[in-house]
Amino acid sequence: MIDAAMIETAVTIILLLLLGAVAIGIVRVRGLFAAVVLLGVYSLLMATLFIVLDAVDVAMTEAAVGAGVSTVFFLGALWLTDTVEAPAKRRQLMPLIVALVTAGALLWGLSDLPQFGSPDQPIHRQGADYLASSLPDTGIPNVVTSVLASYRGFDTLGETTVVFTAGIGILALLRRRRGEGGN
Amino acid sequence: MIAAALLAVLVAMALVVVRALRGPTTFDRLLAANTIGNGAILVLALFGFLTGRPEFLDLGLTYALLNYVGIFAVLKFFRQGSLGAEAEAEKR
Image (tube, rainbow over all chains, first blue to last red; front, side):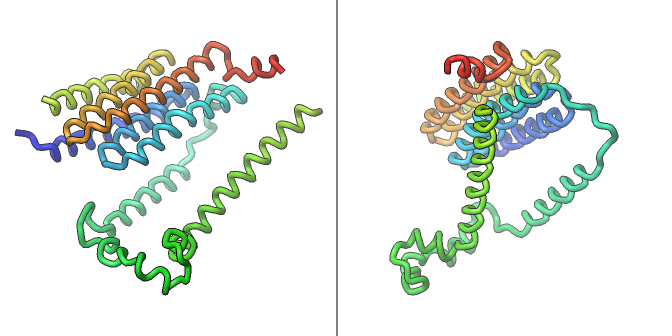
């Protein structure tokens, strides 16, 4: 009898192989329209992989943003520009090197992570007493607020900066469009 | 039984990915993308039943809706050359 864990591993490996094939295809294809379609395929496969890995919420986001909204945005960009990629003047090695170095650093960092699903991770050994210690530690009566604003203060600052930048970008785009229409 | 079905669907998805990568025309790729979306829904449903979590069926339904919206946007782009911005501008 085949057990479910083995099937899960097999499904993960097959999906990863398909993802690799699609990624190479995206890099090699010249028509931008085909590239958009292949990016949608990539997102769908990625969302399926996330579900197999038990990250259902991430999978929903990937399917909605990656396969849904991004496709529409890319098509809008294609409508504003052109659907054929300009031929590269010469081979550029620098992006490839940057990508390889980043991938290597990520793989190297992976080796330091605790085993997937192991019960003696730091989060299970030390992280469970926020309910008791957040009030004396931070003086904030709401536990969620104290975690967001104090324990993870720098995280929240970064997130706020990202949202703020996105808002400024959208405002700038809308402002320009309206100015052109008025003239 | 479910495991065999799951593997069969994955093999089918692999074949469709080959079509998406090679597909001479863009419509081949589009049809392949749509079929991969359907395959993803099937994988979801089968995997849910395999691991004893049939709630995954609901996720599959959401995927079907998203797939529909994506393909619809692409086809509208093909038909009109845009996403309908001119039509909206004419209405005003």
